[in-house]
Amino acid sequence: MQKPVILVVDDDPQVLRSISRDLKSRYRKDYELLSTSSAKEALELLTELKNQGTDLALIVSDQRMPEMEGVNFLEKAKPYFPKSKKVLLTAYSDTDAAIKAINNIRLDFYLNKPWDPPEEKLFPVLDELLDDWQFDFRPEFKGIKVVGFQFSPVSHAIKDFLSGHLIPFQWIDYPNHTESQLLLEANELKQEDLPVVFFPDGKIIQKPSLSQLAESIGLQQAVREETYDVVIVGAGPAGLAAAVYGGSEGLKTLLIERKAPGGQAGTSSRIENYLGFPTGLSGAELTRRALAQAKRFGTEFISPGEVTGIEQQGSYKIIHLADGQKIPTKAVVLTAGVDYRKLDQPGLSNLNGAGVYYGAANTEAAACKEKDVFIVGGGNSAGQAAMYLSQFAKSVTILIRKDSLHSTMSSYLIEQISLTPSIRVSGESEIVRAYGESQLEELDIQNLKTGETTRVHADALYIFIGAKPMTEWLDEGIVLDEKGFIVTGRNLLGLSGFKKTWKKEREPLLLETSIAGIFAAGDVRSGAMNRVASAVGEGAMAISFVHKYLAE
Image (cartoon, rainbow, N blue to C red):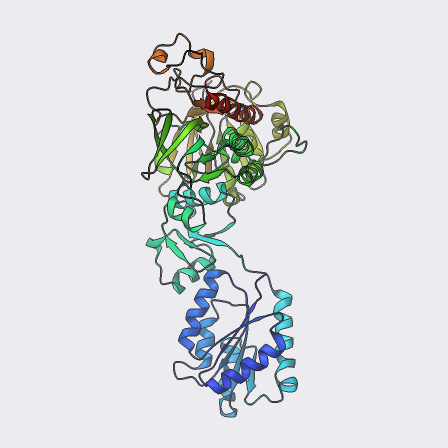
């Protein structure tokens, strides 16, 4: 654990060595001592400490310094660490300035030089000051800080990416959080540079791409093997299960995810019907456990990594990534999952990420405190989001086209919703228009039974209206059903286009696509059950079929 810092500034090398020696002898067990002979260098150091989230307990500064007087330095230092204790080293002739500084900059103490013996004239004073600081001390956040506008699509994408990869970070809303303005001023940044990400090592990135973020947090970006036994495309529950079983059974396994692991299940605030977890678990927790398990068995994981195509080359498949990488593999498991369908009502597209969100209830929930939130959709994902958001929002309204939730949502969720006073279900309703300049402000909601339209205030809108398969990138050789889901197994027999690509004497295996050696599992597969448990089961089954294919 990083120790709090004591900073000493004095332009006289002899005095600096003397005060540093005394402070180290007394406080090095509990504090880290930093010292400099330059006030300007000290200000730069304060910026670095602030960016890193370091805790600064005490500043000891000499009064008479050529670059700036100690009082002026402490005045400039105060905004960086307003709760740090401040001590001025003075000569007798500087006493008046020190007394004035007590009122002007809330100086905590001034010490006349020399302070010998320190046991009588130095340590008792500093002991008391440090004890006071420790009493009120609340540790600074140690990790990634993101400064940006709350209703910014780019900021939302960064928060979503970090949350999806289970990376702890602190969101600092500009300009509503005083620290946001301090961080920008200290680093000579402007509003136009937002969002800005501050890393614990002092690195700063303005408007980062997801690839830049991934590289900075240490996610794997390039393959390590020349050839893989199996490449899994998509890190939802099915893909994670395939990665665990592939790695545990000795296959050279690579998992590729274009956004963040967990898929739609990973954004769920609570999964209560998953076998073995009677009190439920969050999608993030399930994802964290599964990804750690897969990596423990040697599975490699690339994220973000967008697969743009699969090329057949003899008995191998070549995976093409958007960044130009080409990955040879013997078999492929497609677990790309599904994405929420988009609403196309007027006004919504302009506010995507600025009050209008597809999924992502966990990412933006804290910003909904004491606000009016709307949810479109009647499935389990919508119900779980409503329950989670009700812990923050003043009101949560679920909009559905049907007259009730009973035909689309699990009974346990319906019961929980009915017992939550802040949640209201509005049946036979739909959104017809959204309003807002830089963020969502109002919605027009139509009663489908009467045709009447009502305009309501809305701070946020979360949309869960069914899923479309992530299959737009697939080659025409892989047969899809009329809705774009991948057809597998015996369901392929007799379909047009199947014989063009299927060149085996045998029938396709249960989860095999129209191209031998390419399998599909989970929600992206035609006829899938759309449950976490079934997706996990299919992911495990897919590896069993990969073994059979490789044995050929």
